[in-house]
Length: 163
Image (cartoon, rainbow, N blue to C red; front, side, top):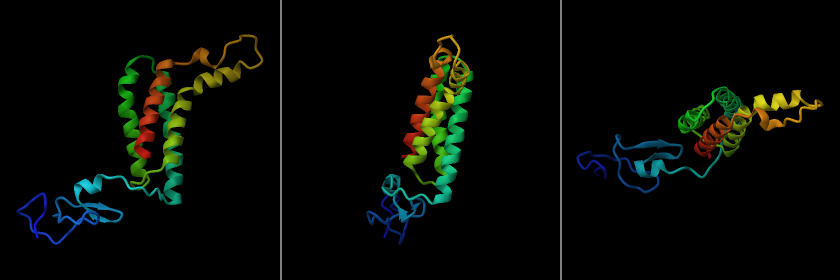
């Protein structure tokens, strides 16, 4: 039997999903056995994340998301929007790997919300500090709109990677 992608490679290994013969160069190790590259790319419908990995993902997601959003709020400018896809994808990938290459919509949602709230942390603190004063300035008075847009894009892409 020969690999379906490398006709010169003899093999006894088959994809656990489609049963095509695959060589060790093509084999992708998944939680249910070796798969061909096409079947190995498909996302699993199971969302079983062990509790310690889920807790780690939640803590890292909330902390890193809020940190990224908070740091972005300190930078002013349109350039934030250009780097937001890269930051969001890197954040999602880091969390995905920290959870043992498992996905969790809960961790993705917490990360996305924490990223946006982190970008609003400064204005929220300022609004709380002005409570009871007659300034009339709301939470949006000191908001960096670019940072909020950055946080929404980055948080959304991190969430997309973890769902």
